[in-house]
Amino acid sequence: MEDLTGRVAVITGGAGGIGKSLAERFGREGMKLVIADIEAGALHRTVGELRDAGAEVIGVQTDVTSFESVEALAAAAFAEYGKVHVLCNNAGVGPPSAAVWDTTPNDWKWTFSVNVFGVAHGIQAFVPRMLESGEEGIVINTSSPDGPIAPMPTASVYAATKSAVTCLTECLDAQLHSQSAKVRAAVFYPSGQGLLDTGLWTSDRNRPSELARERPRSTPALTVAQLRERGMPIQSLDELAELVVEGIRDGRFVMILNPERAIATLTERLEKFSRGENATEMHQLG
Ligand SMILES: NC(=O)c1ccc[n+]([C@@H]2O[C@H](COP(=O)([O-])OP(=O)(O)OC[C@H]3O[C@@H](n4cnc5c(N)ncnc54)[C@H](O)[C@@H]3O)[C@@H](O)[C@H]2O)c1
Image 1 (cartoon, rainbow, N blue to C red):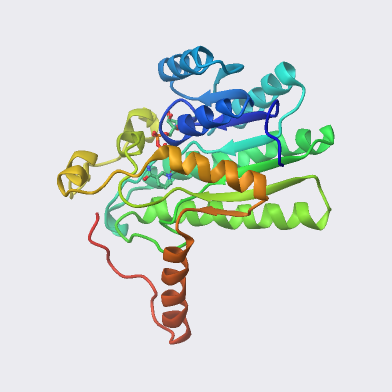
Image 2 (cartoon, rainbow, N blue to C red; image 1 turned 30 degrees about the vertical axis):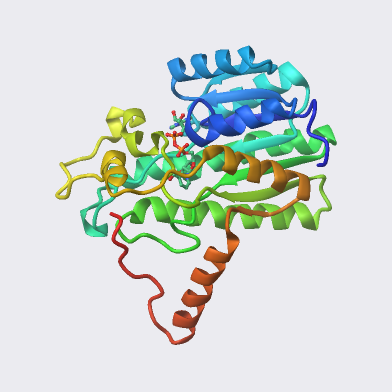
Protein backbone atom coordinates (compact mmCIF):
# COMPACT_ATOMS: atom_id res chain seq x y z
CA MET A 1 0.00 0.00 0.00
CA GLU A 2 2.13 2.84 -1.28
CA ASP A 3 -0.03 5.92 -0.84
CA LEU A 4 -1.62 6.19 2.59
CA THR A 5 -3.33 9.56 2.07
CA GLY A 6 -7.10 9.24 2.52
CA ARG A 7 -6.87 5.61 3.67
CA VAL A 8 -8.74 4.60 6.81
CA ALA A 9 -6.97 3.25 9.91
CA VAL A 10 -8.52 1.77 13.05
CA ILE A 11 -6.32 1.54 16.14
CA THR A 12 -7.37 -0.31 19.28
CA GLY A 13 -5.67 0.92 22.43
CA GLY A 14 -5.14 4.11 20.46
CA ALA A 15 -5.68 6.58 23.30
CA GLY A 16 -2.17 6.25 24.72
CA GLY A 17 1.33 4.84 24.38
CA ILE A 18 2.29 3.11 21.14
CA GLY A 19 -1.27 3.23 19.73
CA LYS A 20 -1.40 7.01 20.12
CA SER A 21 1.94 7.39 18.46
CA LEU A 22 0.69 5.27 15.51
CA ALA A 23 -2.40 7.49 15.31
CA GLU A 24 -0.30 10.68 15.25
CA ARG A 25 1.96 9.26 12.54
CA PHE A 26 -0.98 8.02 10.43
CA GLY A 27 -2.65 11.40 10.86
CA ARG A 28 0.45 13.18 9.51
CA GLU A 29 0.19 10.82 6.53
CA GLY A 30 -3.32 12.17 5.82
CA MET A 31 -5.10 8.99 6.89
CA LYS A 32 -8.64 9.00 8.33
CA LEU A 33 -8.65 7.62 11.84
CA VAL A 34 -10.83 5.59 14.18
CA ILE A 35 -9.42 5.49 17.70
CA ALA A 36 -10.76 2.78 20.00
CA ASP A 37 -9.95 2.52 23.68
CA ILE A 38 -11.50 1.40 26.94
CA GLU A 39 -10.45 4.62 28.72
CA ALA A 40 -13.07 7.28 27.93
CA GLY A 41 -11.08 10.26 29.29
CA ALA A 42 -7.83 9.42 27.49
CA LEU A 43 -9.80 8.63 24.32
CA HIS A 44 -11.51 12.01 24.41
CA ARG A 45 -8.21 13.85 24.96
CA THR A 46 -6.37 11.96 22.21
CA VAL A 47 -9.15 12.47 19.65
CA GLY A 48 -9.11 16.21 20.50
CA GLU A 49 -5.34 16.43 20.08
CA LEU A 50 -5.44 14.57 16.75
CA ARG A 51 -8.22 16.86 15.50
CA ASP A 52 -6.27 19.94 16.59
CA ALA A 53 -3.34 18.59 14.57
CA GLY A 54 -5.61 18.49 11.50
CA ALA A 55 -6.59 14.80 11.38
CA GLU A 56 -10.04 13.51 10.40
CA VAL A 57 -10.81 11.26 13.35
CA ILE A 58 -13.55 9.65 15.40
CA GLY A 59 -13.23 7.96 18.80
CA VAL A 60 -15.22 4.88 19.78
CA GLN A 61 -15.06 3.65 23.36
CA THR A 62 -14.38 -0.06 23.03
CA ASP A 63 -13.59 -3.00 25.27
CA VAL A 64 -11.69 -5.45 23.08
CA THR A 65 -12.43 -8.31 25.48
CA SER A 66 -16.07 -8.15 24.34
CA PHE A 67 -16.86 -9.34 20.81
CA GLU A 68 -20.05 -7.23 20.82
CA SER A 69 -18.03 -4.13 21.63
CA VAL A 70 -15.53 -4.77 18.81
CA GLU A 71 -18.39 -5.58 16.43
CA ALA A 72 -19.94 -2.19 17.33
CA LEU A 73 -16.55 -0.57 16.65
CA ALA A 74 -16.41 -2.17 13.18
CA ALA A 75 -19.98 -1.06 12.46
CA ALA A 76 -19.11 2.51 13.54
CA ALA A 77 -15.92 2.61 11.45
CA PHE A 78 -17.65 1.38 8.29
CA ALA A 79 -20.66 3.66 8.91
CA GLU A 80 -18.34 6.66 9.16
CA TYR A 81 -15.89 6.01 6.33
CA GLY A 82 -17.36 3.09 4.30
CA LYS A 83 -14.05 1.19 4.32
CA VAL A 84 -11.09 0.26 6.48
CA HIS A 85 -7.60 -0.24 5.07
CA VAL A 86 -5.42 -0.59 8.17
CA LEU A 87 -6.55 -2.35 11.34
CA CYS A 88 -4.11 -2.17 14.26
CA ASN A 89 -5.08 -4.71 16.93
CA ASN A 90 -2.85 -2.98 19.44
CA ALA A 91 -4.67 -2.87 22.81
CA GLY A 92 -2.73 -4.86 25.35
CA VAL A 93 -2.05 -5.25 29.06
CA GLY A 94 0.59 -6.73 31.29
CA PRO A 95 2.80 -8.09 32.41
CA PRO A 96 1.71 -9.41 35.83
CA SER A 97 5.23 -10.67 36.45
CA ALA A 98 5.60 -13.52 38.92
CA ALA A 99 6.92 -17.07 39.10
CA VAL A 100 4.62 -19.21 36.95
CA TRP A 101 3.34 -21.08 40.02
CA ASP A 102 2.60 -17.75 41.68
CA THR A 103 0.35 -16.54 38.87
CA THR A 104 -3.39 -16.85 39.47
CA PRO A 105 -6.31 -17.97 37.29
CA ASN A 106 -7.45 -14.35 36.98
CA ASP A 107 -3.98 -13.23 35.81
CA TRP A 108 -4.40 -15.65 32.90
CA LYS A 109 -8.06 -14.80 32.23
CA TRP A 110 -7.51 -11.03 32.19
CA THR A 111 -4.29 -10.97 30.16
CA PHE A 112 -5.55 -13.48 27.59
CA SER A 113 -8.93 -11.72 27.34
CA VAL A 114 -7.28 -8.46 26.25
CA ASN A 115 -4.11 -9.55 24.45
CA VAL A 116 -5.40 -12.64 22.61
CA PHE A 117 -9.21 -12.55 22.56
CA GLY A 118 -8.99 -8.82 21.78
CA VAL A 119 -6.95 -9.54 18.65
CA ALA A 120 -9.21 -12.45 17.65
CA HIS A 121 -12.29 -10.22 18.07
CA GLY A 122 -10.69 -7.58 15.85
CA ILE A 123 -10.05 -10.15 13.13
CA GLN A 124 -13.56 -11.64 13.42
CA ALA A 125 -15.32 -8.27 13.28
CA PHE A 126 -13.21 -6.51 10.67
CA VAL A 127 -11.71 -9.02 8.23
CA PRO A 128 -15.02 -10.19 6.68
CA ARG A 129 -16.00 -6.53 6.13
CA MET A 130 -12.55 -5.63 4.78
CA LEU A 131 -12.64 -8.57 2.32
CA GLU A 132 -16.21 -7.72 1.30
CA SER A 133 -15.22 -4.11 0.52
CA GLY A 134 -12.75 -5.29 -2.14
CA GLU A 135 -10.22 -2.69 -0.91
CA GLU A 136 -6.56 -3.33 -0.27
CA GLY A 137 -5.95 -3.78 3.46
CA ILE A 138 -3.67 -4.89 6.24
CA VAL A 139 -4.29 -6.22 9.75
CA ILE A 140 -1.37 -5.36 12.03
CA ASN A 141 -1.35 -7.30 15.29
CA THR A 142 0.86 -6.01 18.09
CA SER A 143 2.92 -8.80 19.57
CA SER A 144 6.17 -8.39 21.54
CA PRO A 145 9.65 -9.86 21.38
CA ASP A 146 8.80 -11.10 24.91
CA GLY A 147 7.34 -14.47 23.97
CA PRO A 148 7.74 -15.25 20.29
CA ILE A 149 11.38 -14.11 20.02
CA ALA A 150 12.35 -15.11 23.57
CA PRO A 151 10.13 -15.20 26.67
CA MET A 152 11.00 -13.42 29.89
CA PRO A 153 10.32 -16.21 32.42
CA THR A 154 9.23 -13.61 35.00
CA ALA A 155 6.48 -12.42 32.64
CA SER A 156 5.20 -15.85 31.66
CA VAL A 157 1.53 -14.96 31.22
CA TYR A 158 2.28 -11.93 29.05
CA ALA A 159 4.88 -13.86 27.04
CA ALA A 160 2.38 -16.66 26.41
CA THR A 161 -0.21 -14.16 25.12
CA LYS A 162 2.28 -12.55 22.75
CA SER A 163 3.40 -15.94 21.40
CA ALA A 164 -0.28 -16.63 20.71
CA VAL A 165 -0.61 -13.30 18.85
CA THR A 166 2.33 -14.13 16.58
CA CYS A 167 0.99 -17.65 15.98
CA LEU A 168 -2.51 -16.54 15.06
CA THR A 169 -1.17 -13.73 12.83
CA GLU A 170 0.98 -16.20 10.88
CA CYS A 171 -2.09 -18.41 10.40
CA LEU A 172 -4.25 -15.45 9.37
CA ASP A 173 -1.77 -14.21 6.80
CA ALA A 174 -1.19 -17.71 5.39
CA GLN A 175 -4.94 -18.13 4.89
CA LEU A 176 -5.38 -14.70 3.29
CA HIS A 177 -2.40 -15.36 1.01
CA SER A 178 -3.76 -18.76 -0.04
CA GLN A 179 -6.95 -17.01 -1.19
CA SER A 180 -5.02 -14.28 -3.03
CA ALA A 181 -6.92 -11.79 -0.85
CA LYS A 182 -6.25 -8.06 -1.12
CA VAL A 183 -6.08 -8.00 2.67
CA ARG A 184 -2.92 -9.26 4.38
CA ALA A 185 -1.68 -9.49 7.96
CA ALA A 186 1.48 -8.35 9.71
CA VAL A 187 2.97 -8.77 13.15
CA PHE A 188 4.45 -5.77 14.95
CA TYR A 189 7.10 -6.28 17.65
CA PRO A 190 7.53 -3.03 19.62
CA SER A 191 11.07 -3.04 20.97
CA GLY A 192 14.26 -1.08 20.59
CA GLN A 193 17.16 0.46 22.41
CA GLY A 194 15.77 0.70 25.91
CA LEU A 195 12.55 1.27 27.73
CA LEU A 196 9.19 1.90 26.05
CA ASP A 197 7.82 4.48 28.46
CA THR A 198 4.10 3.78 28.00
CA GLY A 199 1.09 2.98 30.17
CA LEU A 200 1.84 -0.76 29.92
CA TRP A 201 3.54 -0.68 33.30
CA THR A 202 0.33 0.57 34.95
CA SER A 203 -2.05 -1.70 33.00
CA ASP A 204 -3.76 -2.70 36.24
CA ARG A 205 -5.65 0.60 36.00
CA ASN A 206 -7.88 -1.11 33.42
CA ARG A 207 -8.18 -4.47 35.18
CA PRO A 208 -11.85 -5.27 35.88
CA SER A 209 -12.67 -5.95 39.53
CA GLU A 210 -14.18 -9.36 38.70
CA LEU A 211 -10.77 -10.40 37.35
CA ALA A 212 -8.78 -8.90 40.24
CA ARG A 213 -5.85 -10.92 41.55
CA GLU A 214 -7.13 -13.55 44.00
CA ARG A 215 -4.24 -12.95 46.45
CA PRO A 216 -1.44 -10.41 46.82
CA ARG A 217 1.76 -11.01 44.87
CA SER A 218 4.62 -12.57 46.79
CA THR A 219 7.10 -10.37 44.86
CA PRO A 220 6.62 -6.63 44.24
CA ALA A 221 5.74 -5.52 40.70
CA LEU A 222 8.50 -3.88 38.71
CA THR A 223 7.79 -0.20 38.09
CA VAL A 224 8.80 2.04 35.24
CA ALA A 225 10.46 4.36 37.81
CA GLN A 226 12.76 1.50 38.90
CA LEU A 227 13.72 0.83 35.30
CA ARG A 228 14.45 4.52 34.76
CA GLU A 229 16.59 4.53 37.90
CA ARG A 230 18.63 1.70 36.37
CA GLY A 231 19.55 4.25 33.71
CA MET A 232 17.73 2.52 30.86
CA PRO A 233 17.53 4.73 27.77
CA ILE A 234 14.05 5.57 26.48
CA GLN A 235 13.08 4.18 23.07
CA SER A 236 11.35 6.72 20.83
CA LEU A 237 7.74 5.77 20.07
CA ASP A 238 7.90 7.91 16.91
CA GLU A 239 10.59 5.60 15.57
CA LEU A 240 8.26 2.63 16.13
CA ALA A 241 5.41 4.38 14.33
CA GLU A 242 7.78 5.16 11.45
CA LEU A 243 8.68 1.47 11.28
CA VAL A 244 5.01 0.54 10.94
CA VAL A 245 4.39 3.10 8.18
CA GLU A 246 7.42 1.77 6.27
CA GLY A 247 6.22 -1.79 6.87
CA ILE A 248 2.79 -0.99 5.42
CA ARG A 249 4.41 0.60 2.36
CA ASP A 250 6.77 -2.35 1.83
CA GLY A 251 4.13 -5.00 2.54
CA ARG A 252 6.32 -6.43 5.32
CA PHE A 253 4.94 -9.27 7.46
CA VAL A 254 7.45 -8.79 10.29
CA MET A 255 7.73 -5.26 11.66
CA ILE A 256 10.64 -5.02 14.10
CA LEU A 257 13.40 -2.49 14.75
CA ASN A 258 16.98 -3.80 14.60
CA PRO A 259 16.00 -7.25 13.26
CA GLU A 260 19.65 -8.36 13.65
CA ARG A 261 19.19 -8.57 17.44
CA ALA A 262 16.12 -10.80 17.11
CA ILE A 263 17.87 -12.95 14.49
CA ALA A 264 20.87 -13.45 16.83
CA THR A 265 18.54 -14.45 19.68
CA LEU A 266 16.56 -16.84 17.49
CA THR A 267 19.77 -18.40 16.14
CA GLU A 268 21.04 -18.98 19.67
CA ARG A 269 17.68 -20.51 20.59
CA LEU A 270 17.74 -22.75 17.53
CA GLU A 271 21.18 -24.04 18.54
CA LYS A 272 19.87 -24.91 22.03
CA PHE A 273 16.76 -26.47 20.50
CA SER A 274 18.89 -28.64 18.23
CA ARG A 275 20.81 -29.87 21.31
CA GLY A 276 17.50 -30.69 23.01
CA GLU A 277 17.97 -27.93 25.62
CA ASN A 278 15.58 -25.32 27.02
CA ALA A 279 16.24 -22.22 24.92
CA THR A 280 14.94 -19.92 27.68
CA GLU A 281 17.03 -18.61 30.56
CA MET A 282 16.21 -16.24 33.40
CA HIS A 283 16.69 -12.58 32.46
CA GLN A 284 17.45 -10.04 35.12
CA LEU A 285 14.74 -7.51 34.21
CA GLY A 286 11.82 -8.81 36.27
N1 LIG B 1 5.49 -0.93 26.31
C1 LIG B 1 6.22 -2.00 25.97
O1 LIG B 1 7.33 -2.22 26.49
C2 LIG B 1 5.72 -2.94 24.91
C3 LIG B 1 6.63 -3.84 24.33
C4 LIG B 1 6.16 -4.74 23.39
C5 LIG B 1 4.81 -4.75 23.05
N2 LIG B 1 3.95 -3.87 23.64
C6 LIG B 1 2.55 -3.94 23.26
O2 LIG B 1 2.16 -2.70 22.68
C7 LIG B 1 0.74 -2.55 22.80
C8 LIG B 1 0.43 -1.15 23.32
O3 LIG B 1 0.88 -1.06 24.65
P1 LIG B 1 1.57 0.25 25.27
O4 LIG B 1 2.94 -0.14 25.69
O5 LIG B 1 1.38 1.40 24.38
O6 LIG B 1 0.71 0.41 26.62
P2 LIG B 1 -0.42 1.52 27.00
O7 LIG B 1 -1.01 1.05 28.28
O8 LIG B 1 0.20 2.86 26.95
O9 LIG B 1 -1.45 1.39 25.81
C9 LIG B 1 -2.40 0.34 25.76
C10 LIG B 1 -3.77 0.94 25.49
O10 LIG B 1 -4.73 -0.14 25.48
C11 LIG B 1 -5.88 0.30 26.18
N3 LIG B 1 -6.63 -0.88 26.68
C12 LIG B 1 -6.34 -1.66 27.75
N4 LIG B 1 -7.30 -2.60 27.90
C13 LIG B 1 -8.19 -2.42 26.90
C14 LIG B 1 -9.39 -3.07 26.52
N5 LIG B 1 -9.90 -4.10 27.22
N6 LIG B 1 -10.06 -2.62 25.42
C15 LIG B 1 -9.59 -1.55 24.71
N7 LIG B 1 -8.47 -0.88 25.04
C16 LIG B 1 -7.77 -1.31 26.11
C17 LIG B 1 -5.34 1.18 27.30
O11 LIG B 1 -6.32 2.05 27.82
C18 LIG B 1 -4.19 1.92 26.58
O12 LIG B 1 -4.64 3.13 26.01
C19 LIG B 1 0.28 -3.66 23.73
O13 LIG B 1 -0.27 -4.72 22.96
C20 LIG B 1 1.56 -4.11 24.39
O14 LIG B 1 1.49 -5.44 24.84
C21 LIG B 1 4.38 -2.95 24.55
